[in-house]
Length: 341
Image (tube, rainbow, N blue to C red; front, side, top):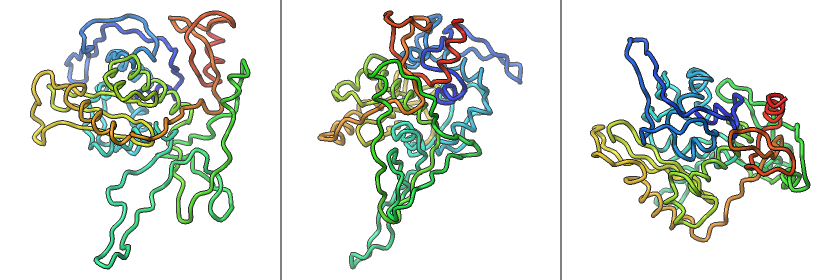
């Protein structure tokens, strides 16, 4: 949902209100979404809202950009649109999705915005050791531009009816330090038979989501994952009503991992069995072993982003002033400047 909001004009410095909400539904019932803590923090930046897991701030952007648009947007992540709620509860994790589908969705953020389809069988051999089946999944490769034949590869930017277009080239730099983000690795060569995964979301949106989910670990609700002592770990808890499901999903290094704890009959796990309690310890134990010796994954701003400094309420800070550093799309900066003027 946050990715859809960033696509529609929100940025990590946008201010959203954490305050009571009341909706009258079509059946005349009243829906009053609540924060887990049952208190309200007032106006806050989008980054802080996700870092602190403020439910009500998740509802407001979804209400602003529309449920139908958001469902279609989320389908880019290899998630089945039919499984997504057709109402605002979608912002609070109201969907019931298979764990492998959730992992595939998180992979889109981790790989820079490419759509991949998870697979269960990599290779099958017969009794004589001959390969009967070998999966050839599409490769999410940010630097790949040349195939084994030496010809340029054309990567589709149209997914689920959305024409994503280029990531953007309107870049405005304010210092030599900013300019380093424009450096690009030379195009890599793909092996014979390999396919390039199509782009699912804007690379700039993927960068922003990775940045914010990493912050959830460093100083937010999932600080327990800091025990892994890696700056590239990004993860998020998830829970459903009545403690039926406990989720923990995230990534670090080259791996994306989703842990689900629940019952096949959808009965409650018991009061207090949240993602941070039931699923997080499993996720940490697995990732501790999986990430051993693996290099830290980078998260560099892609083309079309600008470094800015903002104040506590999201306002731009003049050069030389103190403020919070954010990377925003160049076109978002233009809107922020117009708002100031």
